[in-house]
Amino acid sequence: MRKHLQGVENIENNTYRIIAVDDEEGIIDSLSIFLKRSGYDFTGVTNPQEAIQLIKEEHFDLMILDFIMTPFHGDQVVEEIRKFNKDLYILLLTGHKDLAPPLETIRRLDIQGYCEKSDKFDQLLLLIESGIKSIKQMNEIKEINNRLSNTYEKLEQAYLESIKTLRYTIEAKDMYTRGHSDRVAAFSVLIGKKLGLSDEDLHTLEIGGLFHDIGKIGVPDSVLLKDSKLTDEEYSQIKQHPNIGVHILSNASIFDDILPIVEHHHEKYDGTGYPRKTCRK
Ligand SMILES: [Fe+2]
Image 1: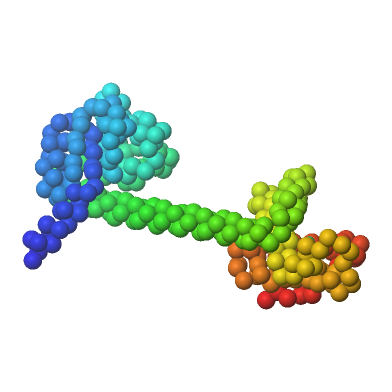
Image 2 (image 1 turned 90 degrees about the horizontal axis):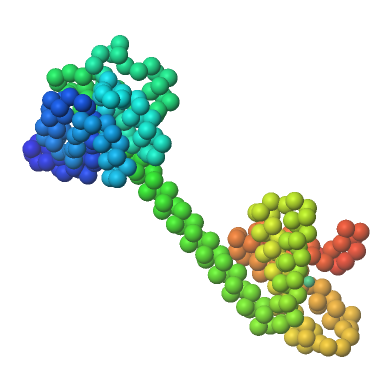
């Protein structure tokens, strides 16, 4: 049973790629035997420059790096790598703890851990295992983020499609409204820009402009399309369209931001214009 579990773990380890850089070939050989036995996909190099190039060209999850090397030290290798790769999990190997780089350098270069070289790799293996756990969590978070951003894009798409459908509905009812609403939206955005509104507010203003007269759907054609003077009764029916518009749009929370625009678009600062009758939920 234990053997079987070990096998499963090894298969899982194999999905993570480790690169080790040490100018001592013996260390690379030992690490290779040890880490391959633990199931990791292992690459070892003795030349720091070659390691930098490999990391540029291929994906690695974790790097084990000797600190004191020729022609340049481990911290310089990390400095180079961090210019193009911020995700690589880096563990530094030091000959002796007194020779370790200062804590400040370790933090600045985002080195995740270091340990002393030893014939036994127990301490290093523990560091690698906790590193792999962090990488796994980081990958899961990235995956969730991607899924969320896909969902957001789909929602945004559905929102835009709803807007389009509703607009076609109004246009089918009253061709006058199309040209009028487009102009109101365009002029509102121009005024909003002059007032220094944010992009988000300008977007709300534009959608509000496009839909401010949607309530005309609820006004009878005989009144809406009448080409002669309206009676008082007919005019009072026309005056219902801001309320009807709010009533229609308040069924979908995506329109919450534009409800005040629709609701008040015939009211004026001086108190004139036609008043609304609240019918918001
Ligand atoms: Fe109107």
